[in-house]
Image (cartoon, rainbow, N blue to C red; front, side):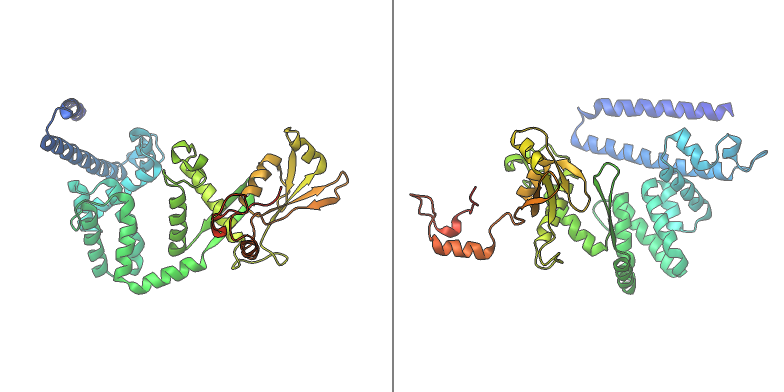
Length: 379
């Protein structure tokens, strides 16, 4: 046994020296030599992954003298836990390695098993493929599964494309391949996704709002496209002064701002439901004494309708600038003293009327057409 551990130690030392030499010389290498180094390291990595799969199966199937299996004899609850603690793998990857080990042993999908053994398919790719094939197996015949096995490995290896597909791309590609083979399944899946659509919103313990939604593939893609466009690194939406270079928001923050924008615009649309004959409008209550504090530039508070959360008046000022918010000023006994406007901008009818009254800019000495002008409410 000492010979085995010594051989593994020697192999580790030899590979370490080879990697150190490759890293040291990479900067001075020609482009062809760099390409060969990349290919060699990639091949070594894949072979290492293949051996890890075989090791997982060895642990899983090794005879145990005193306990249920070898992992438990080594004081682990399972092979998965052993791989997590000893190899530093996450649970999902460790579970996947155990499954791949069983695949190599059982050969349910012979093409994939051979590719994993030979190191032409990575463990990550193999895990994605085997789980997808497992999900189809109960309802598909053996001929179809043979075709699926072969096609999935071709996708992973890049036989039908210039480059092999990444693990995260494979699942989407395999679903698309499956639906092309079974067009009726695509319609059934779309119908099922539509039936299972849902959206939930709740008030969290700190008063912020949590949102969760599950949408069909088509509807979800449209929303993702909108969020991506408004959360891109160079997006000007909500950037300070419209300059992306000054924008310090994270991508999730940009997506949150884009989501608020979408709801703000939708609330004013004629196609959405109304409340009391008008667009859904947030009503904010501000006591008169809080207004006086705000006028003196001292901290002031307001209450938001629907959730009854208390927020800074400064935040309400931002909402008034960006969307339809109606402010109710109240007296000391809570009586409404003033109910502000809910519409920030001029309506189309009002704009047309003003264009009739002022064919040109209303500012003295300015002659640009009225349709080019911006309208402003009197202060």
